Image 1 (cartoon, rainbow, N blue to C red):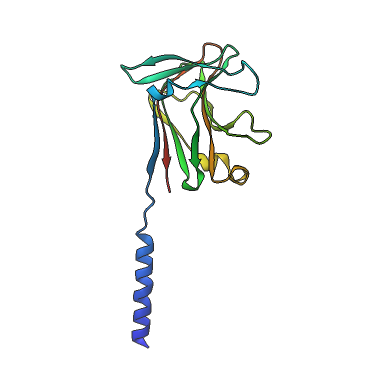
Image 2: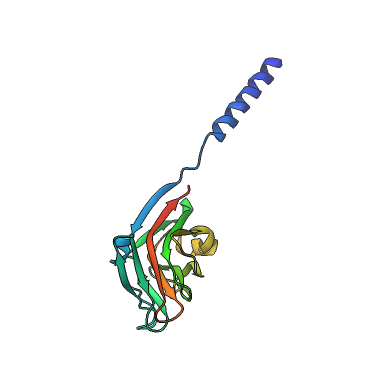
Length: 183
């Protein structure tokens, strides 16, 4: 009987140690440089000429691109098509070089073929004034919630909207955007 207990304890210990050895590996799924962001087009919104921001400046010395709001005081640019795998719990990391006082910035995800109520995109990072060459980070799956996963599935394709707000002169300067899978 003692041998059976020893074997059982050994097997249980082995299972626990093997199970505990599995580490979550973070992987950079995509890095979007300032020069790539500089190629993005104005946002396409449900209302013509609303939110159609622009690239105001590209600074190759310090490595950032500046996005300017539209004439109606908010707006920005949009990426090409990007697929987010929400099963991998991606983090969206936006490195903001500068955001002047009086300006705010935000990031939305605009799904391809949005369901009713999502025509203006889904906030990932809400309006804020975070700045000084630091990262604004969000867990995309947590931010969107399980309802979005149920509506669109775990792989969702769309565009990233990078926006400035606070008036027609509002700007945000960004060095890079990273998508990092945490699982």
